Length: 544
Image 1 (tube, helix red, strand yellow):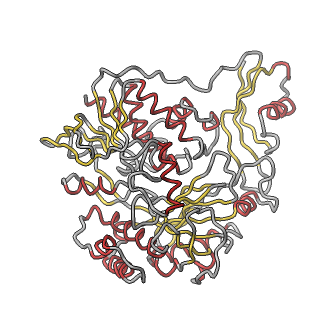
Image 2: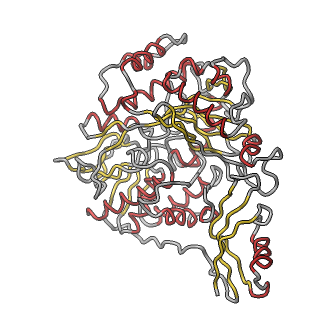
Image 3: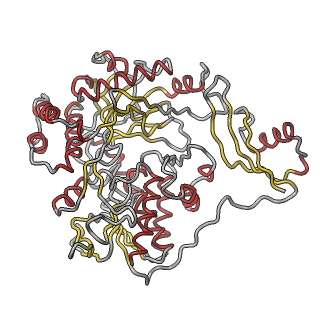
């Protein structure tokens, strides 16, 4: 007989399945001899009150053996002789599109501008040592996409678009811990995710698919408003329908589509900073205890949101026990992001704290102010930055992308024309004071004191300042000079949406082109991009 219980217990009681079993025997009157197994199905933390509880959904097997696995693995067929489809980009959208195509009997050909995930690690490590970003192999470009080295968080609110459960099960099939099927906020970890990605690639190749690394798509081949294929940076032409899963940082792709008259539109995004606290302080605040998390609780996280002057101010990509990383994808720019290893064991907590930014917020006055700040920064401005600052003939759909580029270049100049991040203590930012010293940071390229409140756009600064004050009123101690603001967080989402038919997910104008995932403006993280990849694969398979 199988029974399921929803229980609420203390962290020490939820520490392992044996202690949960003992609680069930004592509180539910079950016989120890009858219990052949206890399986935790769901787990979440309730830290709203001073006493912390763990909410569990458990399945108890009485006088019968538990099933062996939490899920049934997918059997992927041989598609070596099947019709082919091209996937541009090997991030979560592209990889899950490829696996779904194989399920549906279509042979995927993946074209990825960056390197395999293991080789990417070397180029990423070089950023801190050399202060130079390889424009084709960095935190954004390469196998696994931006998600491979930005934490591996799998929480999503996009549950109506497809099966979150299936995505998590596929991750488990390729080596992720089964804990991601249980936890309310599942997380693989930056140190574990690369091996999972490699196994996905091996499966694609075993089934007869192709993966071409260090191969950039340089052109789309279009005949009579239909995709014929692509031309690559190696001079090859590959023919077939195309899933375009290039990620939110492939600005050359946006420009290519604009030049070819393929319809896109500017999309709202969010801009702000990466905020870093001591993890111990966040533990104390979130768990309402001077002792912090103790022996049985994980590193605490937070999720914050408010409204300031009709725009959202909120936390994004919160990384407990993590690190701030240099996420630029080219020269003359600084972008920061966050990641955590699987054990979330560092002494820092970080999150993006960002302000919602709409196309109408980018006024001519703001554009003029940014251009002046770029040209009058006090540093030797490169020709590329001068060109950007004075550029006026910008297609309307690319205006917010250009705004991103300007802010990232301005941050680069204030960082001293390297990957050193301009930074400011949190309370100093709120009170408009330059920090005379900075706390130790996890950001390995280094930090330099900078008055962020002076050079960031005023409509972002004032909203962040008020947002921080509001967050502190609800969580006293959050606003502190122990915390550090690092510039700049701009890649929260794509600045573009590629228009597609709602029923077929095909581009609204070009047949055989399937814009996919975060870069196309239809996803906001690993799981939602993976779901969109599967949906695009299904639409493509149906079309052929």
